[in-house]
Length: 202
Image (cartoon, rainbow, N blue to C red; front, side, top):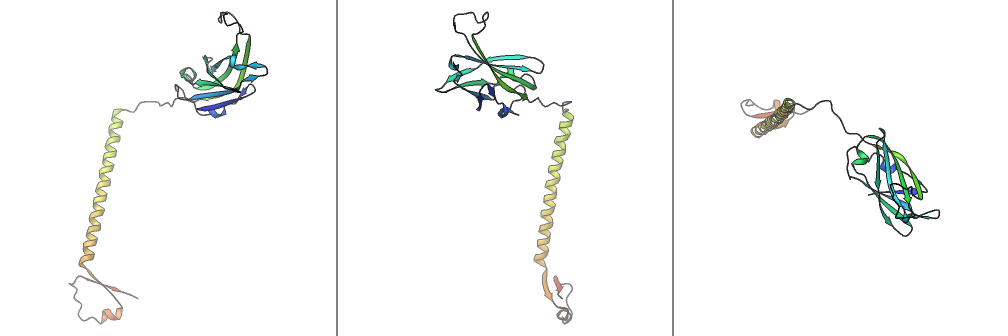
């Protein structure tokens, strides 16, 4: 879980860079930490809303869960589909508000206190796109090519093994003698039919 800390009424969104992708839902949870008191206001009595606006102008508002600690308040922002429906730049604003009279009609009455926190825009990564679907014939050809490659590799390995064995058998049958030219010349009537390999050394 990511943690963003407010500095006054500014919240840096740099930790969210490259994190959010289009059509993701509840993949990332962000905790926003606020000082419990802003000037003389006790923010534990406030409700908080995360508001966003896409490049096309689509707007979303979600009430954040609040946890009150001794000196700070934690707000939980679940990044659901309402924030990732479109790719591109996403403008953000955290709004805190409070009604002194809890029995008023909230839809008809403006709150008594409103705080607006500034957050730099974030970028929602778009979906990767192709220009056509791979045809079944292409898939079949790819499978055939892979099978042929594997068969060729097996045949090559078998041929190499056979050649190594033949060389080993030849080495076992041939007697190798290393000698000088004088020693070779001194051999009387060397039997050329014998499987002997003479190696003349300098």
